[in-house]
Length: 146
Image (tube, rainbow, N blue to C red):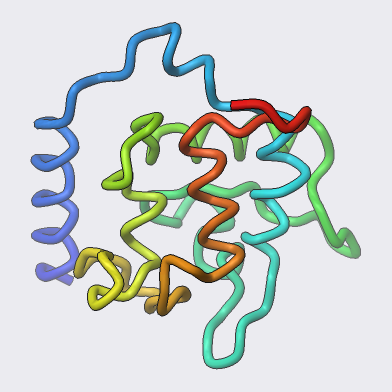
């Protein structure tokens, strides 16, 4: 447990060194793109891995705090999606490839960091799901503009 605490302390220090996004930049993260393209990634089952929501759903999760799915639900409603969006935004520095949302689930050999006790879900920056996360971090909108 102390290793986990140490890792989060290091992460907090690293995030504290990154420039805070301006309010104009923070607004560049598109909710509709997040809801329709990014959120499904958190629900996807990958061979050898738990779904993101399995570990990040609920108040006991670390880092990304996703809303738990309601019994029988296969996705989130609008209110839950807004909460997920707000949580995910905390792991993003818009336009920055070093955003925790991008580097934590990415293999170190592909440019990821050593954090993320849930494993490395993406072995390459060419993975289509990772590319979707990157597109959102870099301002992709549901309308297709950046």
